[in-house]
Length: 301
Image 1 (cartoon, rainbow, N blue to C red):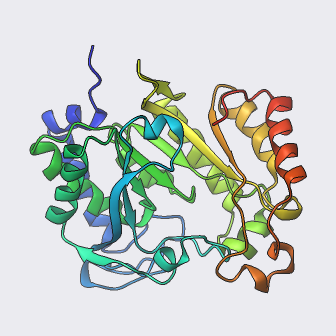
Image 2 (cartoon, helix red, strand yellow; image 1 turned 30 degrees about the horizontal axis):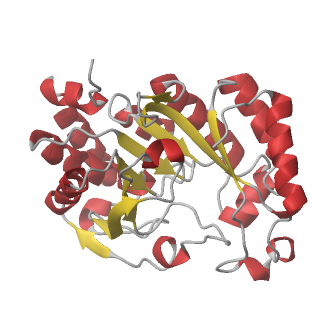
């Protein structure tokens, strides 16, 4: 049978409209992410994410630099949201995530972007840094789905996500793509200004897997549903690679599709932190790949 995105079932039974209303209600005392700032974003107040009632978009286009199952032959339809609920001191996209490059958009405009990416032939709609704008995404998705959107939805997140917000996305998101940044709470607090990152992140990843399972590919090798995890190797073992990958293999699934990323380089404020002031070495990356094999993870990008 042809693939059908999960959200179309919710559209038909009216549940998608309910999710939109429920998500917007939470903006009035925002608790969408684990920071739970409690500000009234419906009235324009901004919490840690520095975003009010409207989402801000930096760019949208077919992307050919994502993981192979997302890119396929026609690209991943990425929408880059401005701002972020993390404050990573080494962010490679800091102009967008921290400086806020981009423009505010109404849900109708965001829906038009989704439909345009579909018209260009993209294999999915890839929502980059979506955690703080889930209500706006749901509102746009409702409009786009009513107008014929039928692509898988990718939730491309830094992994600092609240379970209550993921519940709003159950049956909506087809592909979850979270980062797993740290195994050590102190590292998460120091380098991303996020309390309890490992605890929050692991609970979120487990819930994502519960919702969508292991990554499934169609006959073209293109992802249609499931979990894809990213892990960026940091200098001096700061990412806690062994502990993170062991947890992933033992507590989630040894069939987890994993991208161990080697592109770390000092960006943004990284050189203010001596432990981050150099790129990773080839040996550090090879060791991370070896650890994946040791713990039983075999589906590597």
